[in-house]
Length: 171
Image 1 (cartoon, one colour):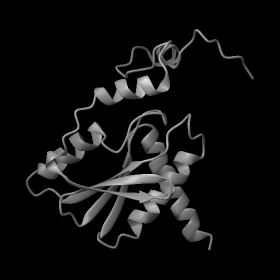
Image 2: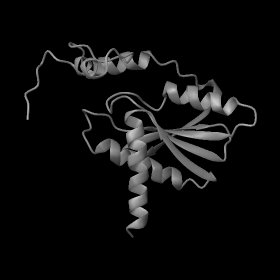
Image 3: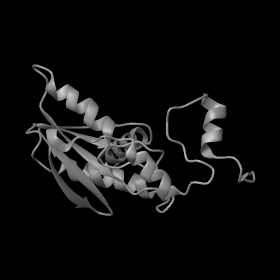
């Protein structure tokens, strides 16, 4: 439909659409691995508040952050489908604070490391999100399972739920 201008970056497009953003958009000369490294350097993930266990689910992995909860939240990180990982700062900040509140719920978080673009094009992340949710639903260690995500992760959380709903209702 259109030809890509090599001098226009994703950051230029985002600025034109949304104005100045605080996100670490790739520079014109930056390759994806360098951008991912810079994105990761902005996170200050604190593992000291969690007991963690990583397990493989098909082509992706899940980092289970345990605090002894009877509820698990399946978390899908943001990052435009091309960066981010299970050691997500937002997940740690939000759920860490919620779990510290007096009378607050005790829950664990299963943070999904879905495959990233461009190395793994669509529908890889969608397939991973659905596989991770299915695995967490089968854990049997939890009374309830919820899903949440940020940005691209919110898209995957919704997609995983819809996929699970359709699978159960189309049998």
